[in-house]
Length: 291
Image (cartoon, rainbow, N blue to C red; front, top):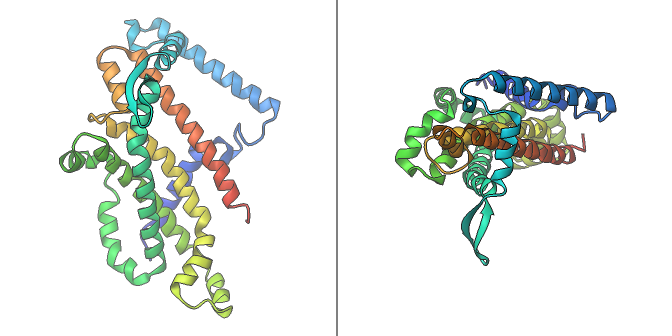
């Protein structure tokens, strides 16, 4: 079985580590005052450079400063958007939350369905040499195509709406999780399966459920964690063609020269990702506590 999975798995693990400072001994691994202090200095230096850059940029709207961006960020949660909620009726929802909800409407289904499909096929191909032989050529053809290259088909098939954007996210989640599952199953030691066979595990279904999936779980979970961040970036790109959400608001605001609002939505994207990543790290830790 050879799909270049080592390289893709390394890429997946590398992406996860790049997104996670704690994976390489970063700020979040140890909460000692020295690390927190250095982190605070780094943030302060970044804000200072940002402020200076904004001061010397002409015209000023090309690079709004930290204060203007913070004000625009606050406005996102002060201004309201009228909407109708089930069992509640018409209410005013903060604009930032409303647009974030629109993004989540295609992010979550695309991520979940793409991850489940990718993991299922990755496990199947990693376990079955015959299926791997049949599908490897197809995988090699389709894998290099970037998810955003499917935008044309998303528009033609689903229109400029949530379903089209969800399809783009699905593509991104599928390949990340496929290679994580494939490499995880491929890396399961034959010693495990031999011991399981000697203990009475006979069918492929039992072997996969009782031995292969637990052994491949670290690789599968790492890939899923990577897909959380990657697909959050993909969904912003998918919205640039007109699907409603935070990504669309970034380009719409910049077209109206409200760049501070664009920066505010970028901060929303960043904060939401940090929250999702921290939450899944805690879940991952619990699921792998047996190791």
